[in-house]
Amino acid sequence: MSAGHHPPLRAATYNIHGWRGPDNRLAPERIFRVIAALDADILALQEVISPQKAGAPCSLREVAAELGYHVTFGQTLLRADTRYGNGLLSRIRPDRVERHDLSVPGREPRGALECRFSFNGRTVKTVTTHLGLRRKERADQMRRLTPLVAENSADATLLMGDFNDWFAWSGLRRDLHALAGRQPAPRTFPAPRPFLSLDRILVMPKQRLASLSALRGAGTAGASDHLPLLAEVALD
Image 1 (cartoon, rainbow, N blue to C red):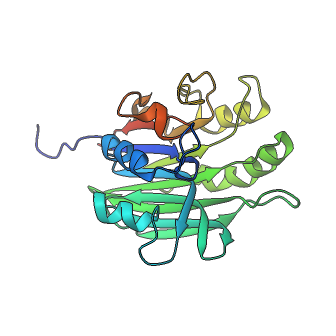
Image 2 (image 1 turned 90 degrees about the horizontal axis):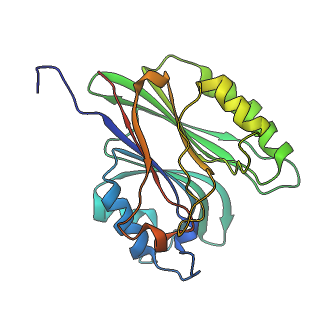
Image 3 (image 1 turned 45 degrees about the horizontal axis):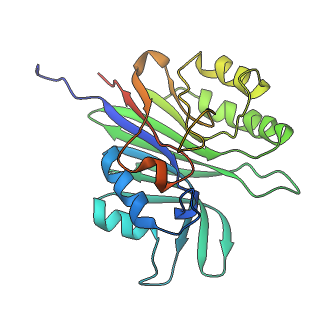
């Protein structure tokens, strides 16, 4: 390896379905194994249930303690003593964190979690989100996300999450292409036999995207109803 050269940043996104697999059984240890197999520097999580009671299972604190991650949480709902929303696991602590409300009246609260990092002298901005189930809801959320993601003060910007985008000809897909250019969209849902590209990692500028794939094996078919996506992002 030449002087000054660094390996690509490993970034992943994963809808963990409240720690439940396609069998609807609560089994966080299956998710833990998949997260360990991803070996990501940055990992965006959706549908995270994180109890606040000490010793309660399935908290992000468990993941951090077991796998050596820093946890940043983007709460969208509070249920008794349990938080629900988006999460970000990272090998290093973010320099800056902002939480953005993407909620639409009458629909489930949604949000975006924005973090900035310094990796080997490069600035990386990540935006983690989980868009709504209805077309107009997603269109409204995308309008609010676009200026946030298009702001290009970072060396690399990553938009990651579950976009609930079921159709290849959708308006949301056109908006994503206009924002970031055409980028790969591996199939991730349903995990046992995926045929829909619900989850996305978009890298800007897109020339920094070195590879993108859905992780198969490592128990991914039974851990959640989504497969995780893993990208390598060139920062040199």
